[in-house]
Image 1 (cartoon, rainbow, N blue to C red):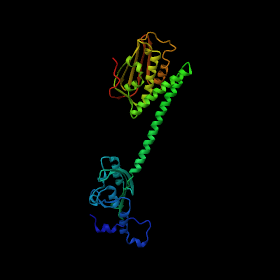
Image 2: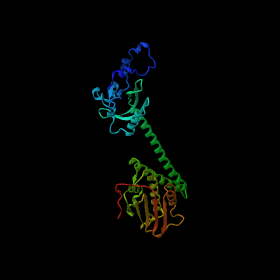
Image 3: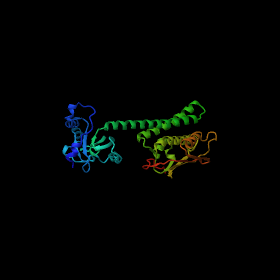
Image 4: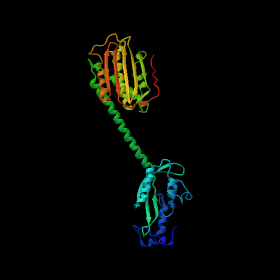
Length: 353
C-alpha cells in the first residue's frame, strides 16, 4: 500500500510552462486536464499486484464501452481478445521491462460489445524523486480507420501488381505467337492470330468467372473443343485444377493441338479420332495426345506448322518438355509441365466411349 511519506515525496514532472500561481493548484488542474481531454487515458498502480487501473477518464470509458466500476481495479489486458497478436502483447511486456520513458505499440483491442479496434497505445512510467516506479500512464488512440486505409492501399497495390503481371504474361504469349505465326497470305496470318487471341480471351473469361482461382483441366478443354469434334475425342484424365498462371498458356497449347488436328491431323480425316490423357505425377502435369485413323500424313512442310509454336511455348515459357512423333496412325505427342497442380472436382467433360 502507499504510505504518506511516499505520497508527500511525489511531485511529478516539472511543468513545461506554468505561472507560479497555477502551481498551487497543480494536482487538481492535472486531474481536470486528464478528465476533460478527448484522448482516452488510464493510470495503473505499478506498486500493486497486476498493475490495476486506478484512474480512467471519460474518453477511455467512451472508447471501450465499459463503466467505471468495470474498469477500476483491473489490468488493461481485459481489452485483449481472440485476434490480439501475442507478438504485440510481448512488445508491451518488453517495453515495461526496459523502463523506457515512453514506448508505443499498435495492438488489436476489443470493446465491451465485442467489436475490435486498433489501439495506438502509448505507455509512460511515473517515478518519484528517488526513482521508484509508482504508476504507469497510458494513452489510447483508435487508429482503426488509418489501419484499414493502409491495408486497402496495400491491397490495391498488390492488385495492380497482379494485374500488371497477368497483362505482361498475356502480352508475352501474344508476342510469341505473332512472331511464330506463319502463313502464305495476309488473310491466313490474320485468321491464325485471331484464333490464338480468341483462345486467350476464352481462357480469360473462364478465369474471371472463377475469381482468378484457376481452372479445371476439363473445363479448359471444353471451351476449346469444336462441337464437330466432341464425338471423336476420347478424354481420360485425373481431376486436375490448373493454377491461374498456367490457364492461358495451356489454353493456347490445346488450341494449337486442335487446330492442327482439324487442318492437318486426325480431324481432317473422316476416320480420324483423338485420345487425350492427362495425370499428375510428382508435381508435374503429364499430357498425352494421340491421333489415330489418318489415311495419309500431311506433307512434312505442312505437318505441325502451328505445333512449332507449341514446342516453343512449352520449352521457353512453361519450362516443360515435348516429345512429338509423326507415324502413319497420326501425331503422337507427350508433354510434361513441371508444376504443382491442385485437386479439382471431377471434370464435367466425361470421357467419350
